[in-house]
Length: 348
Image (tube, rainbow, N blue to C red; front, side, top):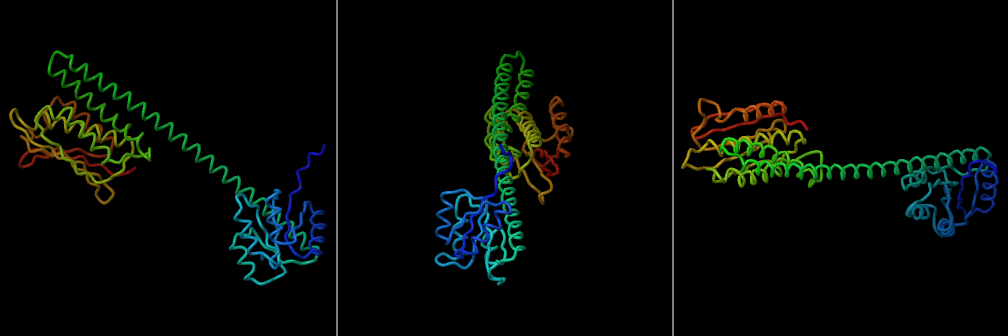
C-alpha cells in the first residue's frame, strides 16, 4: 500500500481541445490529476458532481465567458480556488479576474516554462485556500468557545445572585429575631450591603456584555428596592435618580453599589428627625468621559460636627471602597441638608 498523498485534482475549463490535452499531459507529469471541460456550462455541471482542489479557467469561450463562469463558481457554497488562464495579455483582463475573486492568473503559453509556472500557481492557490479554510474553522471554534464561556459565566452569576439573595433573606430573618433595635439595624445594614452585590451579579446574567455593568440600569432598581425595603419605613418619602449611561467594570459596580447603599441608608436614618420627612436625590455624571461623580443629597438636618452620624462602620466601609476605586468620598454641608460626593476615574 502506498502512503503517498493524493494528487491534487484540477478542473480545467477551456474550449481549446488541443491545448487542454497538452496541459493535461504536462500537469500529470507535475503531479496533478486533470479533468477537462470544454465550456463554462459543462464545467459548472462537473463541479456539481465531483470535488476538485482547484479550477483553471480560460477567459475567451463560447457561451458563458470566463468572467461569467468565474462568478457562478464563486457563488457555490464551498467553491475551490480559481486560477484564470488566458491568452490575452491585457492588464484589464487580469485586474477584472482578480477583483472578481480569482485566486491568481497566468498568461497562456505553450512553452514548458508555462506549465511549471501554472503548476506552482495552482499549488499556491490550493495552499492559500487551505489556510483560509483552517483560519475560518479556527475562528468558528473560538466563537463557539467564547459563547460557551459566556453562557457558563452567566450561569455562575445567576447562581451567585441567587445565593446572595438567599443570604439577604436570612439576614433579614435574623434581624427580626434580634432583641434590640441596634442589632436589628446592624443586621439590616449588612443585608443591604450584600443585596447591592447581588444586584451586580443579577445585572451580569441578564446583560448582553458580561464584562461591564451599565450604572443607570444597575442603580435604578437598586435604589427602588432600597427605598421599598428600608427608606420607605423611615422618613424618606422618595428617592430620585439622574444618571447618565456609563459602563463600569464588575468590581467598580460592586463598590459603587455598596457605597450608594450606605449613603441612602444613612439618609433614611439621620437626615430627617422624628416627625420630619423629605426626599433624597441621587445623581451620576460622567465628566468628559474621564471621571464619574456620584452624589447623594438630602434636605435634612445636615452634618453633626462636620461628620456623618452613625457608628462609624459605614464610613469605614465607604472610605475603603472609595480607595479601591482610586477615588474619594466627601461629605459637604448645604444650606439645607447634606451632599455626599463620590469621585473616581473612569477606567474600565
